[in-house]
Length: 300
Length: 180
Image (tube, rainbow over all chains, first blue to last red; front, top):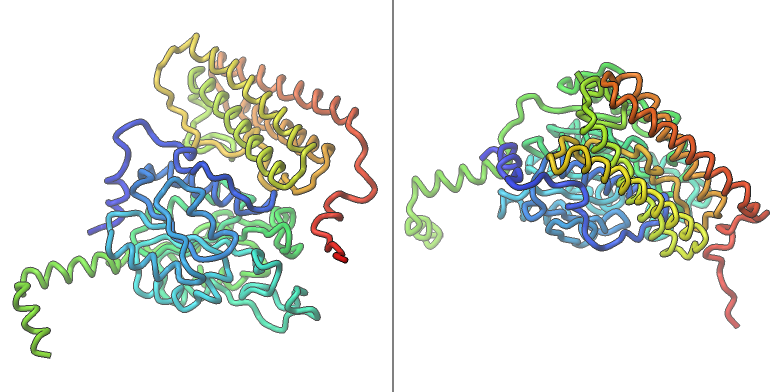
């Protein structure tokens, strides 16, 4: 089954849905000025652009400020345990390939505690969209070093400056063969909504790193004002998103420059994990009757 | 070809009809009203009462503008389906999310509203460069003037607003409390 088609199959026959139709009645309790407000706004705008009905979307998250997102949407939601959002989402997508699955979380949840799932969801090419609100700090727990905190950062857990290099999530996933790798920022909301829309439409694992400022514990260089000063869209650099090596070259600037847009989008996406599972199920159903399968198990 | 300003998607301003322009104007006010409503809620939640009161006032203003434009649209075009959707616009008159801060002063809240009004005026000025239809030009010129008038009104409020305290209220936030 081609999941790109499954998105359009749900396209509303009734009146077009607006971003508001994807928001729940719960009001976000993030700090005023938090980048996550714009990310939520961009996600709901992207849903409206794709026009998948809320009941055909599942939003899955782990733990952290940004992981509150499922509650703020009118879609099905699963607020799981720390770092395991991609594992839960993989199971969900395999069981219900008809759903559009979006996973949201922070850099601590995704790159540290859930770092292993991040790689394996990518290599399996599960058809879901993973949005990481990368604020380079553990905000919910009041400002500890996160896996993307810059070297030298002073935090409550690095009083004299961090001794660690940050991971580079863009380069990591490009090296792992991800079919869709992008970066956005809340300071360019139209750009971010457009990226998320493209990610949702992509048939396969799609990853969007969002430089979402933490206004309470985040460092100066990560705040909206600093981002506005250094933002460069990949389109303005003439980047060809079908060129993986060029994407890897640009992704090396993570942490020093702010490039937004689609770094890489596979022009010939390979089959997704979900479609391979469906093919295997079909092949087994065609080739081996259920009784024979049970018999084979019994022999072991 | 898309000739729209950068915060509008999928609308060719060179071909904009009066109906489209009115629908867009209604949605711009609607978006601003919603954002002020969100800000009001954020301020109430973070015990920033004065800024909350001001944002609620702005929410009411945007709603009045929306209603006036919606009734004009209804009068001219009845219930004809709109070709403009909320997904096409981004923060035209709505203050940007990063304008809000816990414990912001009334003066800071007013400044965020002023920047939003300036942004809206700049939008209509930029849009006018692309618009061909004379009725749309007249409407956008009128709305551009209105946004300039709104800036003047916000400045009047700013003149009356108390000066910011020497020590910002956020400095007092989350101070540890000594317990006997």
